[in-house]
Image 1 (cartoon, rainbow, N blue to C red):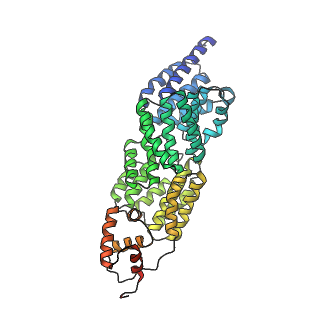
Image 2: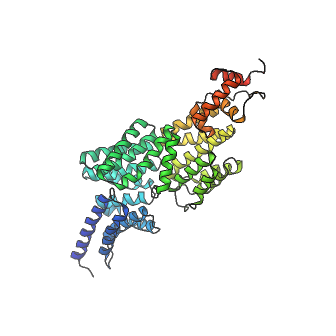
Image 3: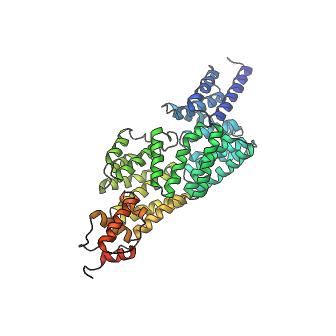
Length: 447
């Protein structure tokens, strides 16, 4: 049986290794962290001690998640079970380990509920507080409280600057950029994303560098830059970024949706065939099979109805953003198909969800789509117009006030293609501008 002295030495050694692990976790490639896991395992001995066990299972679980090992969740659950707030709540090392485990286990709603009050009581150095608040802020935003997440991440960034810790500043700033995009502050998001890239390079942080594109995706989406957004999705899917953030599947489903709605059904099916549906405990899992079915047949009323019904199963905090996004996608497609009632219902669902979360960025985009669909329906165009079916659809879209970019996005073509069709439409109808075009669509023949 080990003596108290031997046990104390093991705990001291384990704490030193865990501190090193937490420092390196923000800069090192996860594969290089396995050596720390092995050394912690050696310290466990034959008589397990809760302190050493908690530190070992934290490191093993985090590395396991980042290297996509099937056993990772067991380690994370064990570490969280061992964390006793009465015993470890005032120990900044164990508190950081527990927070990291909660996020790695994709339980972001637990970050504030279980640990924020303990963080508030700590008298810890700025660097430690910056790391803890980064995780609390990320948990807030991830679980749907975007405004609170922004506040916590801003404070974390300020503390990292105070501590002179470029690696922590890089992580906090990258997440802050993503949250600011969701909030609708795109200028600040763009500035902080650029800053995070520079900081990641200064810190040589492979961890932050791998997630910069994930932080850029919502900025492109909110800005309406579809090509940039698709390019980022292709990178994310190709590199499997998001394996430990809950977005691993959604990145692929989003990209497949884009291809399906823009005429490349074969590419959409290839993306989906490469991966099975996620386990039921994964965020968004209740809706992903129905989403997959919709992607394979995006205009079928039954697959659309099934997808919509599946959204009722997304009731966990980490699924709030996903649910709003899925409703948005469905609403836009119903609008494209001319089903105004369905479109308005789903777009209102998305708008309500984003508003409740404080996600003003995507809310602005949804509001534009909602206003467009809810606008009075113009009189049906004349039947004798000398336009091709595609030209007629372009003419109708432009006549109700849509821009060339919006028309292009709706039709799944480029803005230059819309300009080409508009030139032909103006020539065929002998009109000079959009106002005359709108009038010409309903003017009696020969008038």
